[in-house]
Length: 261
Ligand code: FBP
Image 1 (cartoon, rainbow, N blue to C red):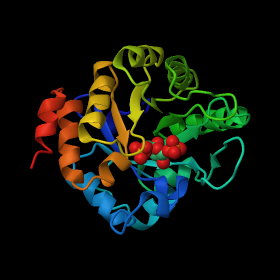
Image 2 (spheres, rainbow, N blue to C red):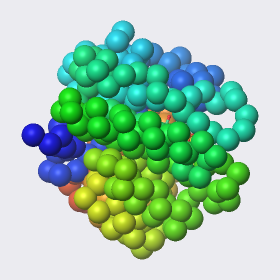
Image 3 (cartoon, protein in one colour):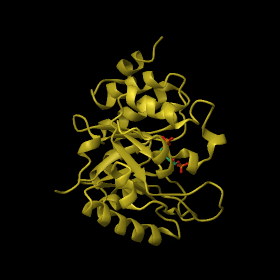
Image 4 (tube, rainbow, N blue to C red):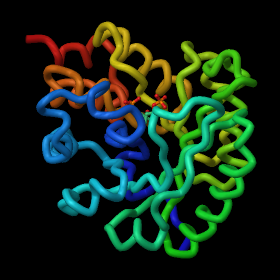
């Protein structure tokens, strides 16, 4: 049977907790004493009723407890090199499967001079994943010298469409900043499910939840979020607020109620 995103959806929507920033950004940039511990994050994922959890293989191998549907990122990079971005494969699909993953994730830096290598590698990984019954999720981030505005509506729509064209079951893209233009990105992604990528912690809860509402109003499937949840002083309340908007279709005001003291 064709692999789908079904294991990661509830009522057709999804909220994925992302925790690969230790590799992507380094522990001193994003983590504190609590969030540096993968067990703390896994507990947030479980208690916060997320529909999926995203780990790199090393964290999965040592910490994954099997309770949540798992996505393994199979490529990655650190923030240390300069120049055009490239993230290469660092975990096989076979290993991701043996660690319990129901999907693999792969980042493509669209517009980088190395995009051909990532498109090629994703093509192989997508095929292997589908042959092994796993979904393939593409993080598509336009980046590099050629990209002057990585959230311009036409660039985000291009990223979304690329996901469909290369066979991703879901694409993880940044928000354009407004619901109207994001709608075109969602439409461009066709049958590939669209998840918004959370981004750095927003200045206020209202600002973040308004973005999430805009994304859902545009027809997206959900959110893949890290910092805006586990850097929050009350991550479980933020998770509850996100469920109100994403799974229950409620308003920003109602969601903010979950964060009121
Ligand atoms: P956040 O919600 O913390 O932004 O996580 C989403 C994510 O895609 C992570 O999976 C990844 O580590 C990070 O963003 C990439 O961030 P950057 O845009 O700095 O490369």
